[in-house]
Image 1: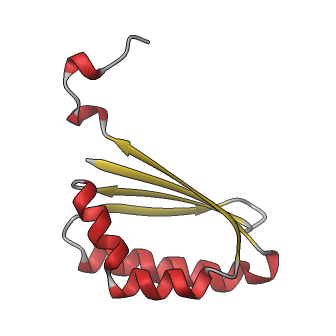
Image 2: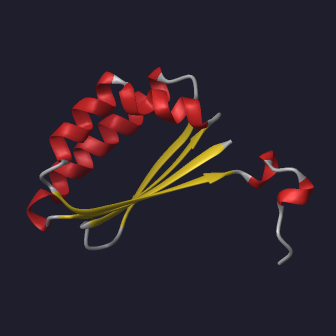
Amino acid sequence: MFVVAVRYEIKTEYCEPFRTAILKNAAASQRDEPGCRQFDDSFADDGATCFLYEVYVDSDAFTKHRATPHFVAYNETVKEWVVSKRIELYTSALNLECGDLSPL
């Protein structure tokens, strides 16, 4: 599995419309994308920090996600509402060969 973690800092005046937009994007991703296995969104108590945890069958499914009409519309809508955005990409440890794992 391919895991995407995204952390947004949102301008405070846009917290509510951002929340609406990301919930719509998450629902469309889970409903319309066969390669999307999970799309969770969480917000800090202040509402201005959002954390996304997304799971796709592989990196190609994530690439396809970024080209969907719902993601393109979402991304365009929120771009001016965001102070910062950090994306981290991971491969599930279950997909790695034993030799690929470093000792703890």
